[in-house]
Amino acid sequence: MAFIQQGPRLAHPLHHDRVLRAWLHATFDASERAALEADLTALGDYALLAHARALETPREEPVLTTWDAWGRRVDRIALSTTWREGAALTTRHGLLWSGQEAHARGLQRAAQFARVYLYHAASAFYTCPLAMTDGAVAALKAGGDSGLIAHALPHFLSRDADALWLSGQWMTETVGGSDVARSEVEARRDDAGRWRLYGRKWFTSAIVGETALALARPAGAGNGAHALGLFFVETRQPDGAWQDGLRIQRLKDKLGTRELPTAEIELDGLAATALGEPRHGVRKIAPMLNITRTWNTLCALASMRRALALAGDYALRREAFGGALIDKPLHRDTLAAMAAEFEAAFALGFGVARLLGEVESGLADADSVAAWRVLTPLAKLWTGKLAVRITSECLEACGGAGYIEDTGLPQLLRDAQVYPIWEGTTNVLALDVLRALEDGPAPLGAWLRAQWPVQNPDAAPVHATLDAAARWWQQARQERTRLEAGARGLALTLARCAAATLLARAAQSAGTHGDARPAAALRRFMEHGLLRLPGSAADECAAILAQD
Image (cartoon, rainbow, N blue to C red; front, side, top):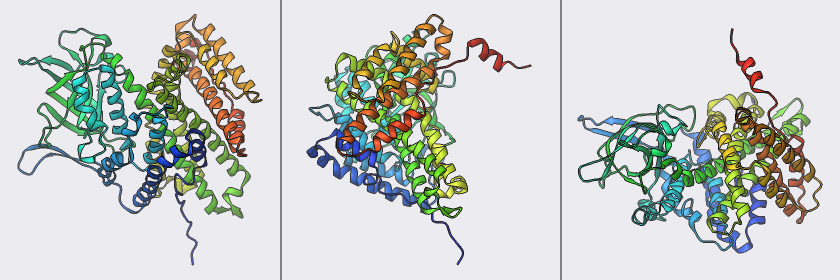
């Protein structure tokens, strides 16, 4: 009988993820873990089901039907099976509401993102509207409109699938992109004094959400970001039809995340409610971005973990050059290098998630709040880039099979490319880090030093790198162009130092139980280097890019 290679099999994402299980043990006490176990197990079970289904059935994508058979405008969007299952899973297992539960130690966000981490890779990016809905909760709370909060939050945090609302995020326009200050969608008062929106939004993720938060410029308000307002809209009428003034022009044909319905829309008088005074809308979306960027980080981790799990299992099943791939020193070294980077990223991502819960609960001191503001964009930008690199390496680790569509592996790479783009590209986030640093990286460095386990010999390289970053900033701040040009290198350096610090804490906790694996991952991660500061001057960049 001819040889047929076995494909990689997905082990249970909860039971066979030692990094996750060690973190759960270190973070929650026995009673808290017991309370989480049912949801986490169920989400792991669903991940296995969804993975098997994806390999056995044709891939589903959303389909827009603009007109019905009789010429009526319907803009009906057919969704995939996985998306139709999303509301029930969300409400049953607390993917949204658990993040808002009170917890004496501020661990509600840690518990929520453990759920998200297990669900994401199976969700066909249903986690995208969940992230935006979670962000909308934060924005509405910050806005302080008690009537709007009472109206929307029970739906956003519902435990009943039929009552659940999702929120979209309508920011991007053709003229602006990340530069939302150039937004042209206009808000005008009608004869009854209600706001209505007019214009075109070029990229609206999860258009099927029942609500959205939209930036718009009040008529006559002037130019610039400060003149923009933030508006809440409901997209559906009671009978399920679209609201008057909302038309879907087309669904986007994207590289990845293809199950996620992303649309271009035209607004022609869509009713809206301003969140507070219709000014400083960009400032008002900041609470939402802190949430959605954390979701982006945790989802990037989930994708990395899925790719590593499949590449690792394939290495056990594939024989080449006289033995199993896992026994080949170079292949084993390659997998270990990726796993060490992932483990450090995991420590940083879940460290930010835990900090978020402590900040929201009022349990974080001023230094921790300041560190969280910097670590949130740092974690997002670094894990976004790392997810692309690791998924690409994992496809390569599967050889030619990694390039074959119906193995399911290429989709991992296409989908991963979204992480460094959504919620701010790497460069946009790096500039955000500059603004968050204010007085430079020294305060963050002091906070990280305070987190480092006592008498750990691996601390010296991290502290030396933090000192180098502080010196670079002091020199570069004298010339704004140099500071901006080096922002990405500075951010990546600080992210790696933060990841090493939090991984060191995890290694110390595991070491007390006789588990030396996190310490080995820490040593390997630090061997890859921490320093990513730029070396090229502005004139060198100009010379490199110059054309004849």
